Length: 282
Image 1 (cartoon, helix red, strand yellow):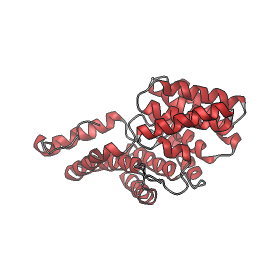
Image 2 (cartoon, one colour; image 1 turned 30 degrees about the horizontal axis):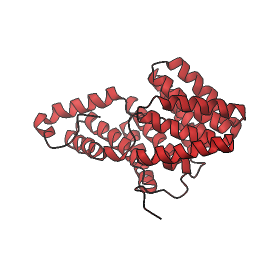
Image 3 (tube, one colour; image 1 turned 180 degrees about the vertical axis):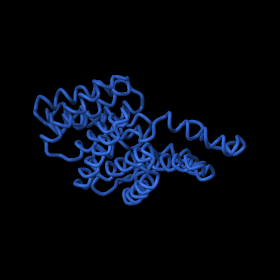
C-alpha cells in the first residue's frame, strides 16, 4: 500500500485519523465517505463522517464546516444516536463560544453532556465537562472548574482512545493550578501530560504542553527556559492542528500567551528573539 504521509496510533478511530491527516487527504477521504454514505442511507455512519469533516473544515477556516456539523446534529437526533448528538453539540458549542455567545455555548455543552450520559460513552462526556470547566474558570469559579476538570480526567481514563482527552484535561488543570497560585501542582500535571504525549505520539498535546510549561517558567522569572519552550513549540507548529481545534481547546488563552511572551522578551531583551523562527506569531 502506498504510504500517504501520516501515522496512525493503534486503535485510532478512522474518522479521527482522517481529521488529523494532512488537509488534502482529509478532504478527499471524508468527502468520498460522506457521499457514499448518503447514497447508502447509513445515517449513523454518515453523522460521524459529517462531524469529522465539519470539524476539519472549520479548523481550516471554511464556513461549510459549521453547516456540516449542524446537519450531523439534525441527522443524529433523528435516529436517537446520542453519542453523535453529544459530539455535534460539543463542536457547535465551541463555534458559538468563538462567536462570543457564552451562555448559548454553555447551554449546548449541558445538553450535550446529557446526551453523552444517555449514550454511555465517556469520551464525549469528558470533552463536554472540560468545556463547562473552562467556562467556570473564566468566571473565576475555580472550585467548580477544578471539580469538572477532575471528572473529565476520570472519564477520559475509561476509554482506550482517551489519551488526547486525558492530556488536555491535565493541561487545563495545570493552567487552573497556575491561576490559583499552585505552581507545584501545575508542573506535576504538565509532567503527567508529557508521559502521555510520549505514549500517544500526540504533537498537538505536546505543543500545548510546551506553551503551558513556558508560561510557568516565565511566571517564575526563568526566561531563558521559557524562551526555549516557546521556541520549541513555535518550531513544531506546522505539524499540529491549528488554533481553531474544536475537540481540544487550548489551555492557554491568547491573552495569557501574549503576556508570557512579552515578559520573556522583556526579561531577555529583543536580541534573544532575533534568531530565525516564529516566536511572536502564535
